[in-house]
Image (tube, rainbow, N blue to C red; front, top):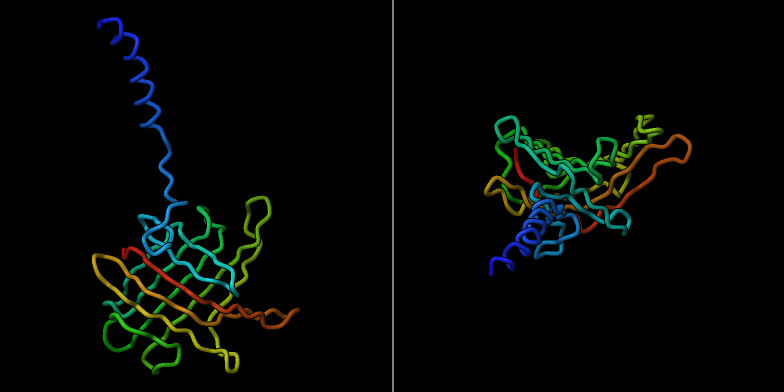
Length: 185
């Protein structure tokens, strides 16, 4: 018995060491709704039909006595990664669960901004911003806050964002199937 223990003890220690050093990578797992599982949260949407997930440093915060809700997330775990920001601001009353349209009323302002950084050798050269703006009949952004509970904001969004490109003209991105689940800091 002593010989079995003395031979297996190093193997058990090696196994425990291996398991304790194993990388805990939740980036490929999904929650019950098929969304990326991440303790901090996520923002995701289809951009002209192609799914983009902002699951790094995805979080949100209330400011101005709960009259402003800002949420953002990065596609990659670095500061030059593409980002998506969503904001809701009310001049009267607090932000609550419900549906917010871009042009609901003069006391509500909502926006979505998608930022792509152009970099070279790891240094920022320029940013391209796709933002919510009125471009004729493609002007609406809809954000539906389904839950503000347990320190989290959860909901859906869809709409249109554009960039003003002097060479190519306005470039339009249609956001569909947008979802968010972010911790509120």
